[in-house]
Amino acid sequence: MQTNPLRFRPKLMPTLATLLLLPALISLGQWQARKAELKQALQETYDQREKGSSLQVGAHPLDPVAVRYSRVVARGRYETAYQILLDNQVHDEMAGYHVLTPLHIEGGNMRVLVNRGWVPVGRDRNVLPETEVPQGVVEVSGYAVVPSGKFFELEKPEDLRSGWQKVWQNLDFKRYTDAAPFPLQPLVIRLDPASTAGGYVREWPRPDARIEVHRGYALQWYGMAVVLVVFYLVTSVRKAANDDHDHA
Image (cartoon, rainbow, N blue to C red):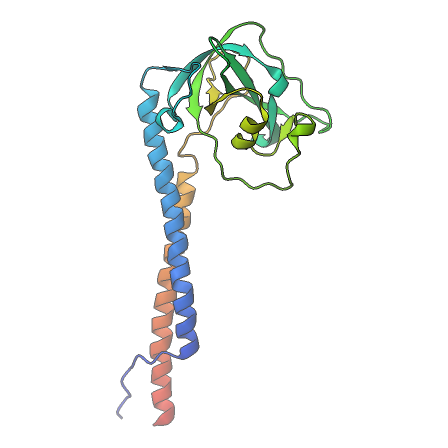
């Protein structure tokens, strides 16, 4: 008995579905892979600059790209009037804030924001945690980070013209610089864990944190693309064989 040869005869709907889904799956895989590559590049920059000597943060504006992740040092006085508590910060599965306090740098009118670390929310969110600062001139050491301009706001920020907002959902650096009555360095100093300049919990994440998660997601999306192609080819061939048998 003669058997019908297997033939590749795809049907319209599975073909259209595959043509739509395949680019999307590949694009998602590339997106996760690029995020992993970016974090790896940032970590290499951090490792390289961490080995260098500390840069002095003074009265003249610095290039944020050039100093990003560099070790820095600044001398001045903390000013709590324009301090903010950055909300939705988690440490050991506990909710809290990051305390960001402007430092009035010696020798001019320039300030720089110092992230002094994490403090817990407490039992009542309506009662803000007490955050003391050292009196007098302090030397702040840490490393420079550039605030991201990409974030999601759950609600419209308050108008700062009516009064300073103490709790912020995100560090909107432009909003801060527009509202503060002083010039500000375009970076934030993450206070070194060993510093005694009025810090709190300072377990800063590495730039490559969760990089394996992004790589894993990329492999998943690429794997789903491969499965989709294999499934499409196999089902198309089988359907063509059945069609030949039906018409014999």
